[in-house]
Image 1 (cartoon, rainbow, N blue to C red):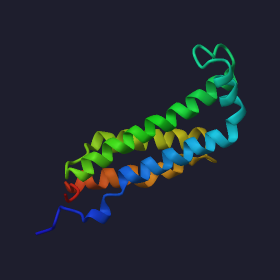
Image 2 (spheres, rainbow, N blue to C red; image 1 turned 120 degrees about the vertical axis):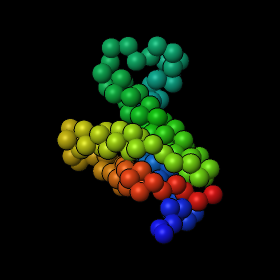
Image 3 (tube, helix red, strand yellow; image 1 turned 90 degrees about the horizontal axis):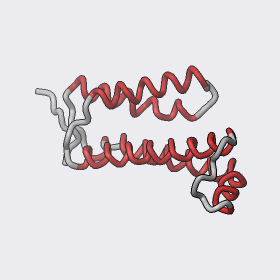
Amino acid sequence: MMDTQPSKANRWIGLWLMGVATIHCAFGVIMFGEVLAAIVRRGVFNTVGSDPMTGAVVWFMLFGAALFICGQTILQLEQAGQPVRAAVGWSLLLLVVLGVVLMPVSGFWLALPPALALLRRAKLGVTPAI
């Protein structure tokens, strides 16, 4: 009978996504530091307005935060030995494919391994070991 409990070392998906999110946000601070500083200088509240660059930077940073939250959630499920629904894997895969199609030279590729791993785990009925 196949063991459906991967070892603790195989609980990497949440940490991977949190790492990618951290790198994403650090990259944003480095590349868009002046835009972020301008937001702070203007008092943060209602500072995006109609400036497309400011809006793009804000969304860039918020996407990193959302990815981090997703990674935290998956990590907590992994640590509790709970399965992650296949819909999460499919959603992440769809996001990756769309991102890669729109921006082939991007970090979207970094979310492909965890998306595929989530789908593989769901197919096998694998839940992380506690």
